[in-house]
Amino acid sequence: SGDESTEAVFGQVFVNPENGPTSADPEAPTMIENNYSFDHGPVHIAVVNSNYWVRSHLDRQDHPGGRGGQREGWLNDEILEWLDEDLADARRRGSTHLFVCTHEPGFPNGGHAHDAMYWNGEIPEVLTQRDRFFHIMARHRVAALLVGDEHNYSRTIVDDQLVEGLERPLWQLTSGGAGAPYYAQDLEVPWTDHVRAFDPRQHFLFVETTGGRSGRARVEVIDIQGALVDPVDLYSHN
Image (cartoon, rainbow, N blue to C red):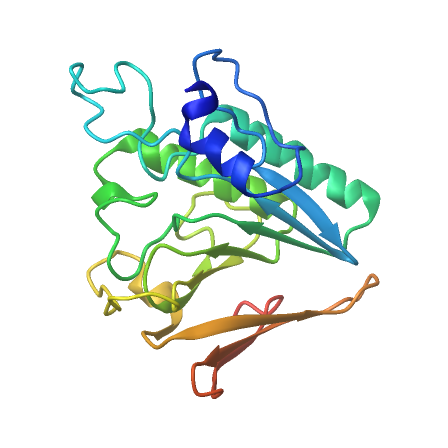
């Protein structure tokens, strides 16, 4: 915690907006600059830290983290409450397209079903917090959740079949195609039929938007050779 925490050092090295949440725990690391948001024209982007205060072996009290720390992929109450208000404020200001970015996927598809925001489906509170995250995004009509972690590309439609009572569907776009090793698709996860595209190649995402009430948002996934891997209209959920 304090000035020696990973979060504090990250804030010293990188310059990000200082409009993130604050922790009610005085012993906890800072959330400023590792949770933040900004506008770019008609686009609003909120970045949340799904690796905040990460600690392994949560059940061990002899761990150097003592009683502090959180599970990988966990978004705590302060972060989710901040995100809810941040997205609402963006809508009030007239932002046309809302995007949320984080590292851990809510619905991993290749390499991280054992952690991320799933943990093999064995920890009920993890699934509850994940679903709360998706409800917030759906309620504010987020165009897409952009995540990393898995070394591949996948496009998954998250709807009320995956999250009970979800207000509207949205895309989870996993883009981890700049590193190695590359992961094959996990065909054992329960939402395989919701995966609309998967590709293990190196790639990047190009997002193009237009403003106004009828503004459009389109993503093109480009591989290392410049080939178009997956074009998608983010407001089409087919």
